[in-house]
Image (cartoon, rainbow, N blue to C red; front, side):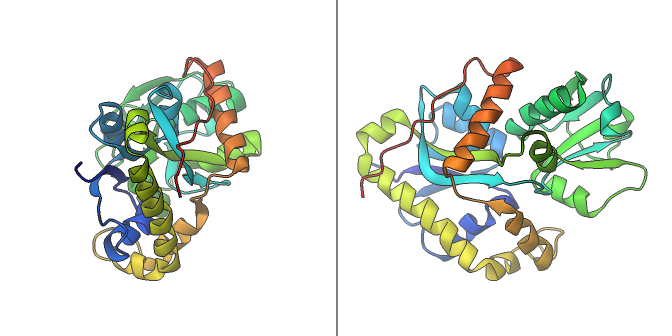
Length: 279
């Protein structure tokens, strides 16, 4: 068989794993596809990848085809700076707003809808847009949702006339729980046919993350000149994130699914089914 195909998020939030795969040797024996979350979601569901990080809402919508890789996620227990709502008026005044959503993600869309509905009793109009403050997105919208490196850039480069809301902090305020933004999943048929590759993928991802976190300053230094952030900004940001997937994470994720189900964003609340890692 060919090398297992692993999808990998092309954002700074996965920098520790990026560094582990490229500098720690944990990408050996894998074909790594780097892309934005929305594209990885599509490729995984289309069968173009054997395993990948996916937006956590994608698992709920496709759980019959996917298994969760244990022990790893992209999560935060509060603010994370990289899912950011930028608005022309305060968040409690967005009931009749038009809100532009990035096309790069899926979980963030659902999370914003849950927060605005449950915390602010708002049901605004949402639309997908190629979003940029510089390109004038707020001329056609009352608020815009940024994710990833774009959100991080806008977090550090604020305009006085706008209101800024960290959606991770809003989730924590609403539920008191951590939020799971992405999971690593494996195709069910692939896992059944190639159990040894499941072990390889598990080791590559978990040990790759551990290596990158251990060498975080070195990993951050590789980004200087490539992204508009300082080493200190990068390491601070990574410090807000958590890459584990414990029972406390499960509780936050299942609460997200339950609230999403109540809003009609997913048909059912799925069981969390894990791939068996043969050690």
